[in-house]
Length: 166
Image 1 (tube, rainbow, N blue to C red):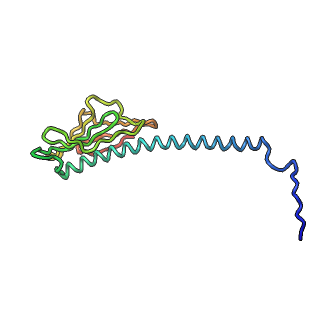
Image 2 (image 1 turned 180 degrees about the horizontal axis):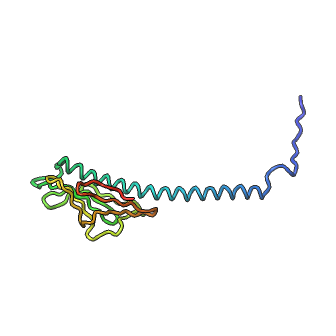
Image 3 (image 1 turned 60 degrees about the horizontal axis):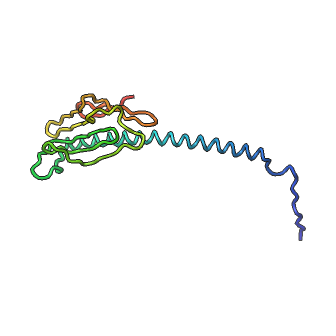
C-alpha cells in the first residue's frame, strides 16, 4: 500500500486578489455589453413586429374587401367595406355597415411605439367592396411609426398596396 502524503500548498499556487478582480471586471463588462445589445435588439424587434402587425391588418382588410366577405353586418345592414383606423397608440379593423362601423379587431401598439405626428381625426384607410377602391383620409398616405430604436415609413397606393420607404 502506498503512503498518501498530504499535499502542501506553496504560496505561489492559487489566484491572487488582483487576478480575481480582473477576471470579474472582464465578466462584468461583457455582461453589460451583452445586456445593452439585447435591449437594443428587443426594441428594434418591437418596432418591426408592430409594423408587420399593422401591414398584416391592412392587407387583411384589403383581401376581405376584394373577396367581398360580408357576413359581418347583421340584419338589414348594407355592407360597404372595411376600414383600418390608425391612431396614436393603436389601430382598429372595422367593417362598414350602413354608415356605422362594426369593430372586428383592436390592436394597441407595443410600449415605446406610436404613430408619428398623428393627425386629428386619425388616419383611416377604407377599402370599398363594390368599387374595389381605396381611400386614405387624411389624403397624406405617408405613414410613419416611431419606436425607441428608429422609425418605419410606408405609403399606401390607390390599389391598397403597401410600399416601404428607406
